[in-house]
Image (cartoon, rainbow, N blue to C red; front, side, top):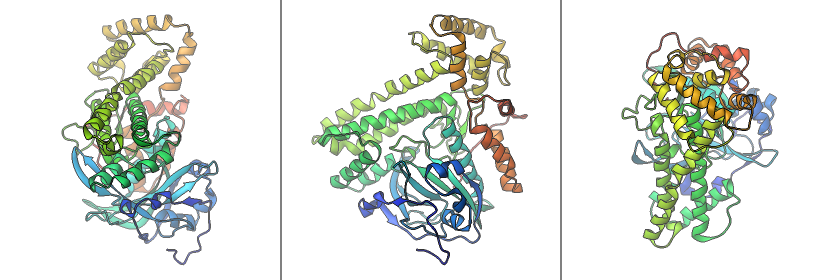
Length: 494
């Protein structure tokens, strides 16, 4: 599997536990070498946390690994099989343009998948070339690292290399490969794939046990209770994750079941974007013509996806299908409660509230209604409240009589808590980001990098995004809105 180049360890410490599952879960594959790989972005801090040698990985041998030209010792390249409901339609799928090279065991004993995205054809490619263009790989790097800095569970980006080869979509584009780091790539769709193959309950049980061991090792017991607890834990993690998306105005754009991880991480940054002007119906994806994955629908789609996960577990929950369905339905019914608890908690923090009052939800909903009516910028509205000054995109909202009335109610609410206004201000600073990856800023960075080979715009953006709650003078420039407001459309980038 190695070429002529001598590949040193560079800190790689691979295990391959997923390969011990039944062979139908994956396909072992050979790397697809590229012509002239060049390292474009490298995440030194992430490399260090993984126990990797950051100097060695930026040399020729490291770049060869990121390009899929060389395989480190202990690696076992494979493509995972999975299925998914894509916009509601069930399809058998798999890693069509990605390969996992191994599971890195960090110095503190944690396990992470190391995956090359855009690495070439696999048995699941379904006619595609298996490659990726530079722009979408840079976008995933930016957004995933921004999400991490915002405190939202996510896959991470370790490196981007260009391949020296074109990829052909509507035109010829630069090819690139992203090295993605994930707690795992086990998805709702992974369970759907196993369940969709037939009546092999043993394989389903093996996958569930593996998932528990990897992500929920505290789950004990045997039989139905064990797998019911797995379902409960996954529901809780997804409820928290989606609430955090909503709180920062993040729209995933393609919430198919194959893009919902059992670890509770955000995965797949294709047509995603952050809202500027607040509108519950906001959707960016060019292919989401019906708004299935619009901002306002994300919690409900999360519950729908979890119901599909619960369906796969029915044979493990109870011997009698009717009883298993009752058990599953009861648990899915709790999703909304978990979600709203996390959302309410987050909104309290964004508005400086330390305690709970019954009328809080109405206070929050009234603010969002006013923001929508006045076409206010989502992020800057909360910055305006945090610093008691006007930020761009909040002018109409702040001068409205209805907002004055709402602000009076909010201030009265603040005065009813024991914490001081200084405490409330600090809580708001800690929960209202000074900077998000605004769409026009991301596009400026991508345009400079892809069209001009200038990565300085991206580097400055990444630096600003790396500590979003710092509220520094340098970050103020990233609060500004685009000079010309036009409808923003995103694409899957496949």
